[in-house]
Length: 74
Length: 522
Image (cartoon, rainbow over all chains, first blue to last red; front, side, top):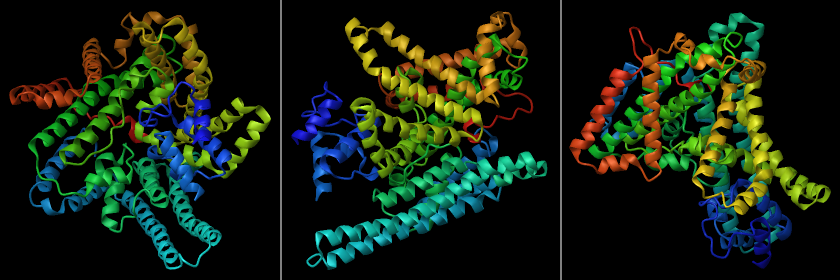
């Protein structure tokens, strides 16, 4: 989770990712942010996030992203 | 059958009557029959295209789901004996088989779209004898229903929605007549939630739907069609009408496009509501956007979402682009290296968005200009955010108004590519605004000789003010909900008033024939 937080903070230092749980719905993260995140996550966690995983529910919070990574690692 | 024709109003009346009476138990079947009648009325040959598309996505959807279900069954039966590695290999094989069905289906359907929309017009330039066949060869709304059908089969592949086992129900999803020719481009998961349900007649909901239809007619007939002749006259003769005329065209076409397209979508959503069916909103007061990026989140929303979900995301997450991203970061450093692949994916999206609108170079240039401006916005965002913060401008009304106006001017300029046949004419006309020196035509009555009388200007102006007022009121919540909560007498007054305004002030005349919606041609 720490590593994910580091990626998120480097993308948007001004956002409190521990509290936000509507990152996509409130348009804090746009589609550009999401694909930048995907590249970072794929690289750092050695997973393969596909287009079908790019739904708001998977990116609305740091916790949701972490759960997606864990699911893909399994 | 135009939405704004008496024939269509008769068609709708018969549908409503049957829908809530004798066909109450078979409403979706009635809708399918009426959708096919509506489409066949444009030309019977179109039915062949839409039936073919429906059949291909039906078969592909079922096969993709079937392969997935079989594989789950197999994995469950061997769950104690299969290794993690073997399971992964097996799943990859399954995905590959499903992908074959998906790709074949997309190739066939986009092949037809490309054939009729891009290859056939090229053939016309070689053989003029084919021109009479144009209406038969290029089916109405093919750009819209192909995207919608492709979206369905991709969603089944992604496991977002189950494959529809009933061919008739799927046929209705593809051909649902209100949205068939100009969208919105619905996703199966959204539209199917209310499309097949049984709907009891609810006077409040029904009247709210009719109210929305009338609002659409108002925008189309009182504003868009009144402005239409002047727009056509100026854009039809780029050699003659330059400078001040083009400046007038910039503003008038932007108003016409908004009134025409959003009016058309109001009619679509209103028909849906009258039938108890929820159709997605396609606009969210787009001309109040502060940036071009925001504008594209608020204008033609369903098309933008389609390109984001089915082009931008798959391209960005593809192995090729992920590898390129690694290379890019190594070569250009972390900041630029991260952005270049995203910009590349966005370039593809805007190239395709331009091409989707039409085969001409002006649409391609329009798409790529949008891309360029959006990328410039991305690059300058950090810098401008910092400056606004430092100067404490961000929350100031004047600065917000400046940003809205700046975006509106950009959109107006980009819209000019719609008006002319070639890029040369568009650029030449745009430049002429600055070097012709005839801005006096805006005030000396010259514009009144081009199909719009002073009275037309006044009426269109009042119409625009009403539209603007409604948009401003909507900032604080839905005006229609407020009307719905008001006493019956007040509601009736609004409806009667709107009806009378359309009847009296709609752009009619002896032999008047409402013009085709602008987005029908895309």
